[in-house]
Picture 1: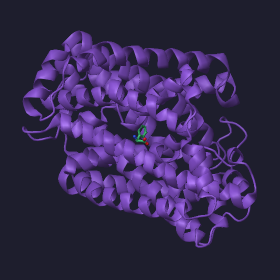
Picture 2: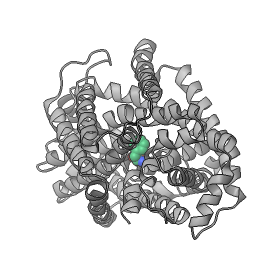
Picture 3: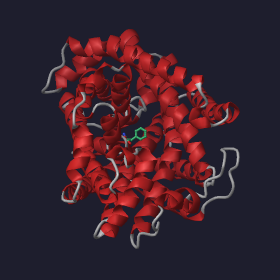
Picture 4: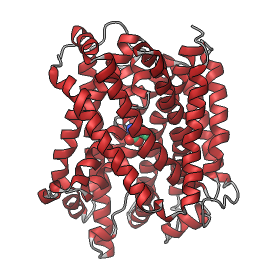
Length: 479
Ligand code: PHE
């Protein structure tokens, strides 16, 4: 149960709340569920099964398990956990800090009548370009310290008393609070308009390749795949583990949560459109715009809006924290596996480096840095890591070992469809996503930034993860 909730805790993150519903809306509403579930069945669940069985069969984190496939692959395992920890985790924490700040700002609706300019000007003090860092924003830095402290203490306490316990509290809490938001928002006037926009199917959209690419990307991202995370968690499972049943449970809970949370997001947007007499597409936005501009505005129009806003931002903090713990664990467990160091020490040192390194995202140029680093790490790094992972298992190790291992232990047996997915479907889909990302990333400057700044920051950051991974993988094993 602790493992299941921790894996769900990792999968359910900010992406489920602020990304899924928008992607659904923009890609054909209810019709999008077809590519989404196709992606889940043909790639998401197969990769999750791969990660669970690989970790369980070879009993180790990504570098340890990969090195058993062949010493040359150890590097890939390090690369995944290094960019997860020192790439994604660092800015993910800064975003959770914004959520924590907005949780407190909800009381009294501190953003006033213009949440847009409050967020960009007053809160972030956003500079005009990534090379203008300006100063550190004290409330964001303070929030970042608090979030790092929480992540550190949970991880410091170990797997059972820390990570499992935290998720046993966080997950039920998150589900209850989300249910409150869904019921509450569906009772607001205009909610039906929002839900119609969210789910009304437009089957014509399914002929656009981009819709399918979006479905597959969302599945990889939401299930926390190809990042050494699920591998780290599954490496702690006992000898007897029902691997396939667990993988199916985790995916269904994660995707079910996304669909459910979408009702709260779109009911609220429908309410705002109705009150302001605007068409729904004029109020819809995703990710940062949804959480820090659209939602605050909607909340200020609602009776008891402070309360609603506080619950919403608290949900983001809880969903974010349970994911951030897992992002860090991917690295910590890898380090302990290889160097045999003590968990408390590794956690403390890693958290301090993480906090200091993450400070760049709390500056006035922070949002620009988040955009660029996120683009390089998730659009290129993550996709490449998943591609190589499936090639490694499908073509080097061979799928048979892991399939036999799963089938020996689990109640739900997997057949050759799994081998086909790992050998052909996953590499093909990730290959297409990678080429598309390179093509669109190189055809126009990202987000309108200059080429020089994009490559210096994003490319530099990615290159640094390669250097650190190489250094760690070339050291001798200490266990
Ligand atoms: N799966 C989580 C989400 O959707 C956590 C995650 C964070 C995954 C960052 C990848 C990168 O938010």
